[in-house]
Length: 428
Ligand code: GDP
Image (tube, rainbow, N blue to C red; front, top):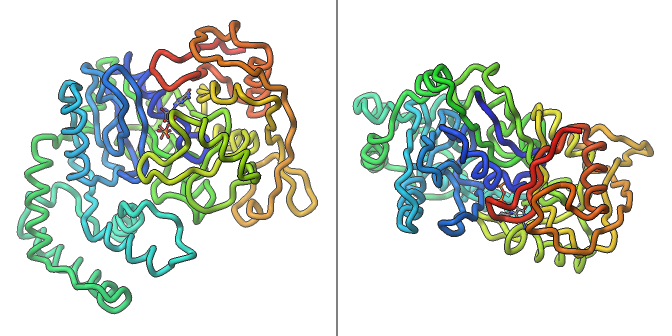
């Protein structure tokens, strides 16, 4: 069977931890989209890790980890990540790279930098990992698929064409040095050596695994609100973050995905610019939650940037779970809220004089104001609790309230960063 683990919100929901937990009983973990622009933070018996490209199954020896065709693959970065986890005592992971994956090239990162510089104050808050230029090239059909590295004549011609296009922009718009096709070819040959040991027809591998009854996890990056079609465009990422895209990005039929675990955090956080309706506007209140949040504070795993924080948003999460097709919801980081006397929960928006509970399109969202309901806090530390019944009553009420508002079953609750800190819950 295939289970997708995806974000119901803006990303940073704790998907890495949930994937790490579920990977214990899985055979294969697949990354199907995105690149090294976001990170999963995972804490387990080997230590604390920030993964950017590696699938979160790398800590489980029995798991085969796959970089699917939908990923924006920065090869040197992936290789560094693998060596880093091995140097910390993790057994060398089993890793396969799709023979259809496309490569993030150094010029994608350069274009990201140039564009952020050009936009200056109006920038998107890109992590400058080359993701938008990469996906633009892929859909403009000038991307480099990894198989091209083994066809030197074809590659040389392709690089000439790429340089002609890119250099026009580089020289005339950004006033930078032009790219040199020979140098790019050398870089490609280095990439070929890096990739070769891992390349496989991963789509065929997955089909065979499924025939053999294996369990496959699809690991999403970011969340529904960052999907270019369904999210808060243009403050989105450049690849689809919804489980539906998992079929495309892993190279499997859509009907194989029978479980979708939508991960949602017990409060909200977002990085970069864009509408964030339930944001905490009081700087002291926000700083307190930011400092207490996640594991060591709400700061970006890739950039270290402070994340914007907000109260739980039922409107966004209901939409986020619906578009993911959630069969299960994992509510994470619940332990962090134990300090509050009462907890605001955003139950609706007000926009243009109307109260709405359906997540609106981006231009309307910009004008939306939150409608909060106050729930009593539980004022104690719930980490270490292993069953739902043992949680304080107000905490159970908080979970039940959210479950009812979003309309999807919360079957997992994470009450601490470690693998063991998880509560399984029956469907009501
Ligand atoms: P991802 O990209 O969705 O995997 O999210 P992050 O890597 O940003 O993870 C969120 C942060 O929260 C990380 O630092 C995790 O270690 C931490 N975390 C995950 N689950 C929990 C939890 O239940 N409680 C606490 N306190 N921290 C958690």
